[in-house]
Image 1 (cartoon, rainbow over the protein chains, first blue to last red):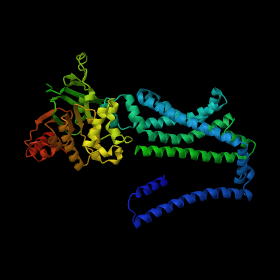
Image 2: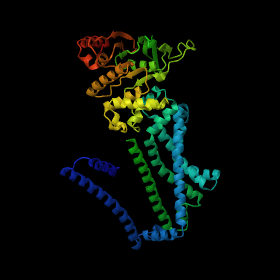
Image 3: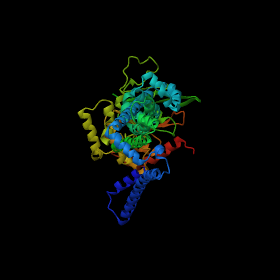
Image 4: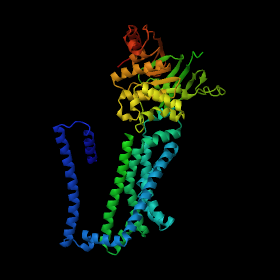
Length: 280
Length: 268
């Protein structure tokens, strides 16, 4: 957030002639940005370095806590025979599927509930309860119903994200400026035109915000699903690794999950920037 | 032939809420001739805007009816007008209090929103919208986003959006109230001049007395809630080529202002 604001200030200043005072201001901003980034990188390096040293000095038991060098070895071993990539790929596509389905179904359901206020009033208390329910509790039932396969995992991920998506997006739909709705009505617009020309376009930022939440939730659903279904994916690797005491596998999987979450989140931020630019 | 372009007959309107019933408009009747500019002025919250929504057919009144070119807007009393043709609501343009431009659309896309909704995006209509934009100083801003324009320019885009569907009747619901004072004077005068030039029949709702006098041929003064007609003033200002700006300078201006001020009966 902070970085983004600072970027904007710098971009805006490109157009004006630069005074010495302004130059100093810009270089102060730049310095600060470099300092923040450097500290962030240092923290990360220090964390792994400390971990490595602690394990080598036997301050912690490397067999239980693993250590960065072991994780690196595990990474090289697992990736050369392709096992790791298979698991990573499985988790990635299932997460994206769950996340996209959650967003799409969430948007469609929100549109439906916006269209029919009676239905949305009727369903409101059920939505509140479903939203509060820990959806992972449903995962074992889903496995019984849908089978011990990837379908159950996707549905778990979907269930976790869809309710909160519906609530967030519907809330956005219901808060569209009533004057703008009236404007469409003064042109004799139909309800479908209000939906497609006003309600949905004006809520693109809401939908993207829901997507940001959904990425994280979808990961939770996928990992829990993979714990239970136990066939493939990083969730499976974590469970299997901990059962056979290969903690380096477990830790490696968690680090990869961190990277995946960061990449997916960043993709959505890029999408958001694109739309925000488009929206002026 | 169309001496009664709009004929408002015995309109009354009640609001219902769980706390009870509120009488907003009570037995209001007036008519408007073709090409006439009429202002409706009244204390805030007296139901002026509701009256405009009723004339537009957006809100159904509790009683009475509105006739546009002799055609009934509502089926009131029920069954009486079964065989009569309803007026085309697409021929009524409505300008709202705020510009309501869509931020994700360019100025041009905003200007043609009405044509798009009414599925009238013919070459001729689009050319007309283009022409209006160029004529009113927005030609080079067509690709801009609303956020890049000033309040006055935005309000002009809103007017073009309304005019591009070529409405015969224009309803203006305090369209200048969101602007700062100077812009407001300027835009009000400009819009008044544009509407005169395009020979539109118009009804303006406002609480600004001088705005009403400078723009109108006739002013209808409403009472506090429930709104009834207090008085109707024929505004005759003896300048040649009357423009809103000239009207403000005319000697008759003060006379009308004081009279209407007294009738509005403002107690703070």
